[in-house]
Image (cartoon, rainbow, N blue to C red; front, side, top):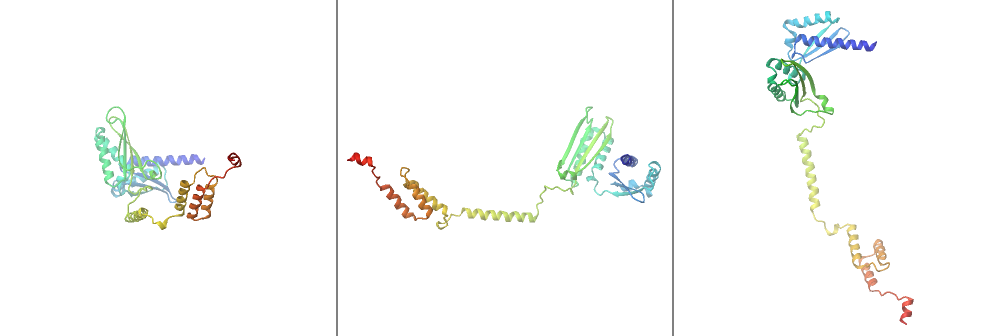
Length: 290
């Protein structure tokens, strides 16, 4: 039962919104909000032209409240009007303006209408705008035309900041659908980088640090700055030149002496002695000599 009540309530709200839009006319209302209070129903109308909605001395508001009471059975409807300061950033108003222009001027001038409205939105300060017109434009075969300029997020968290709206225009050739997407200058773009004086100062500091490091790397190292690894490399080179692989155990002895910290001079002398030392005769060689 609760689901049915909820569906019936939403149907009534949709009917109220459509009736008010049709009664006041296309292009005068952006959106409607209905709030339920203990005193009664509060209907908030967002419009760029509050004078046309209110009428002379509030005549239109009085007529609306009377119809809402009789037709939709609202107990105490209270209509509140809020003005839209920048109508070019409101997607619904832009879509309704394009629809009215197409109905008035015809569908053959749809490019002029679309480009003119696109330039107005971008000049007002919007980050991006996209217009899509679909229908029999300009031939008898239906097509979809896209007009876009600026920066418009299609996905991600920033895409939720885009204003989207739809409208329809009734022309001689048939119905024309209009879709409008506008990214206002107040939209939060999480991957945007604002270049400020503080940001430039940070870049200068980081670049100066990198230059200092490069200059230090370019300077030649002194002899006293040699590391232990360089000394070990020189010892290995001398071992490779003096020690031959035919000698048994001499290379291992030299490596042990290097690890134990024996001076270089003593190592060189041991290497020379091992090279000049005659091999011992075996017993068989001694018997053959005899």
